[in-house]
Image (cartoon, rainbow, N blue to C red; front, side, top):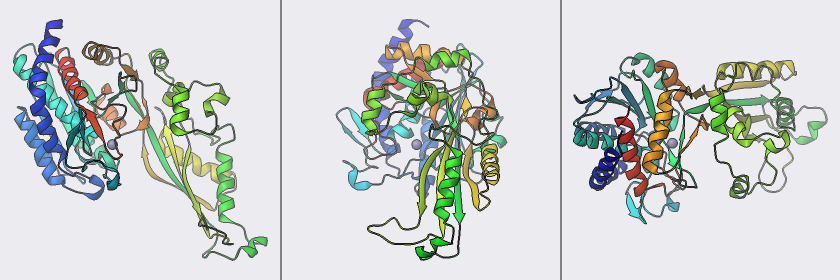
Length: 456
Ligand SMILES: [Zn+2]
């Protein structure tokens, strides 16, 4: 690839970006809140229109349960076809905009202020889709066609956990076959470096409940009646010790050894302990400190077990003497490659039995396996190298993020390397009020996607 090709892309993108922002603003005006099933058909229609206007063919796949998935296809042009296929994964749904009174401008009336575009879904992830489609249009213009085949999978249930994606991909595996995949999201970090991920952690979201009686009881009978809240906290105390070690037998079964490349990449990840502590107002030292562990290693390689919420009895103001009839806790376990959520649930159930807590029931609310791309795959290097040229500085690529998403379904069904990158910034506030992207990042994101495709 010559520098002049990149320069041409920069010039063409500068000329095309204004129109792309207008298209994005239209797209953002649909209140596509999947949790409330809002504006789904209209948004699907708009996504189809965008794909067709960019020169591709679009198909709405709605023969399975769940919101429709839009399939987009752009065949390679005649010039220099590499024979490869790239798949873009995006979603057209967004998070609910609440709390509404914290928005400076209306969430579904996109507004530009200080070089930023504000609207619900602009960073997560409507801006990415428009950037990618714009990159394709530019390549068709300057390159006389695409250097490879490009496919899009745009789903409408990502923000509610993609509950129907696994059977969908199983059915349509051949349709979405590709050599590599660019995932939905990404952003620049606090140092303005593009930060990307090549995998995601999995999840076993559990609910444990203990029922001790049919009704709440006068607490005086605590003299002879056992207490569901105590039972639950005693059970929890057997699952994790004060050193924050998970004690459930079998919990760590199957965990994949990280490759040398993964370990090296971890040591290039940024981590500023002081800013983390002050951002959250932490009152205790990091748990990795006592273990003598690098927090970045923990983020990428360690599974977690977190109490998300716990309820029982009276928690209002003042005193109410009561012996609660039941207690409930929500626990999320972030899993790493090799762990299986069903196995985690079975281990927790066995653990409770073994420790005499037959009266505590454990169920799984949702489960998802982790995914980490093969870090030695040339595609991973290619995305990094092109990012460095386009953004003018080295990007950061995490082997897997500490968060969760349906990446494993893609990796397992399609067997390809996946990198997530996008047009957000460190202050994008995805899922929160006043979500935004910087127009400059949007423009650079278009250039990166076009330049990356050129060398594929
Ligand atoms: Zn999201």
